[in-house]
Length: 543
Image 1 (cartoon, rainbow, N blue to C red):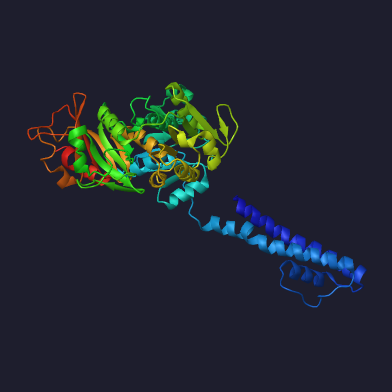
Image 2: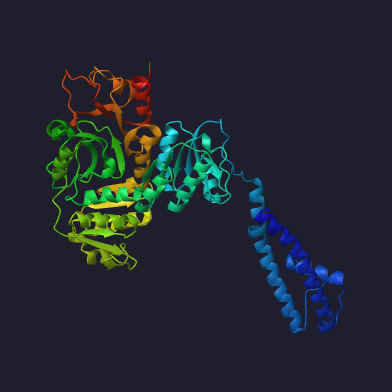
C-alpha cells in the first residue's frame, strides 16, 4: 500500500476519534465547571465546529478559566489540522493517483536494442545527448524516483529500480547492447555480477571514483573502467604546468600527434589585434582555428578577417609541437610563484599530486582542515586568496565541488589577479561558457570527459566535443581515397570540413593541389553533429 494511502486511512481514523474525545471533554467541562449541561450530540457538534474552524452555534462564550483554556487548546489544534491536512494527506494522495508511473521492468528481449545507463548524474549527461543524436535507444535505470520522474519529463526512458540491486529483476537485460555502470564503485561491482548471472554477455563500461577499484572490476567482467575525475585532473595539471608534457589537456588529444587546445589571447601576445589572415597560423604554424569564445559566446568557423582580440579564447587544432609553439606566443610567461589549487577533493587532490610529481610548488586552499591543505578558508573570500599569493601565482586551479561556487570564485580571482592563468573544473557542460565569460583560461566538465571517453566504444566514433554544436571527429580515409580533400565538395554537400590529415605520424593541415588522400591516412573533420552524420551517409556509407 502506498504511503499516501496509509496516511489518508490514518487521518480518517484519527479525526472521528479526536472529535469524540473533545466532545466528551467538552460535555464534562460544561456540566461540572460551567454548570450548563450539554448532551453528547451537542458536544460533538461543538467539537466538529471547533476542529474545522467553521464557527459556533449557541456556545460562543465561557466563564470558567479551565473551560476557556480547554476551548483555546482545541481551537489551536483545529487550525493545525486544517492547515496540515492538505499538504501532508490530500495533495500527496492525489499526486500519486494522477502522476504518470515509472516503469519498473526492463524491456522484453526482442524489442529495440538499448544502452542501459545505471544511475543518472551530470557525468553521463553529455554521453546521453550523443547517443540520442545517433538515434540510439537509451534506458536509464534509476533508484531515485524523484530523479526518474524529472528525466521522464525530459522525454527520456527511465526504469525505476524499486528494489535493492541484488533483488531487482534483470530479466530482459540481454536485450541491451551495452551497459554504463555509473553508480558508486561497490554498486557498479554488484551490477556487474548480477547482470552476468542473468546472461548478459555484452560490454559493461564502468565510471568509478577510486582508481584502485579498476582491477577488481576488470576481473568481474568490465570491458573498460574509467575515472573521469582523474582525467579532468590530468587536463588541469597539464595546463597549469609547463613541466608536464604535452601541454594539451589529456582528453583533447585525438590522434597520435594531434590535439586541440584552448588558448586565451593575452594583451602581451604578438598575435593580439591581428586578424586570422594576418596571423597566417595555418602556413606559419600548421594550426587551424576551429572557433573562438568571445565573452562566453562560442563562434564557429571564424572567417579570415576575424580579429584575434585580447581576452578571446581560440580553439585550435594542430600537432603537439605546433600547439606548444603557438602556446608560447599566445600565453604570457608564467610568474615564478606557486600554483594555487582551490578545493582539495578528489579532483583537487589528484591535480596537486601530478603537479608535485612535476616538481611544481603548490599551495592548496580548502575550507576544511585536512592533511595536505596549506590554507584553511573560503576561496570566495578575497583575503584568503591574497593570503595564498594569488596575485603572484603561476596559475590558479579551481577544483571546487559546486559549479555556482566555481563561477563566483572565478569572478573573485579575476578581480584581484586578472593576468594569472585561471583553470577550472566544473560538473555541468553548460557551466563552461559561463566560466569563460567571467575570464577563465580553460574549463572542462566531467560530463565532457566521460562522453568523449565512452563515445568511441558505443558509437565507433573518436571525437572531441569542441562546443555543444561543434565536434572534431576522427575517421579512416574511407570514401576519400584518391581524391583531394578540398575538391570533392565535402563542405558544400555536408556542412563539415576536413581540417587535418594524419599520415605516417605527421599532422598535415596544408594540402597542395596535387595532394590525394591515401588508404592509410587518418582524416579529421569538424562540423555540427548533423553535418558529421551527413558526411557519414554521403561519403562513408557502403554503396
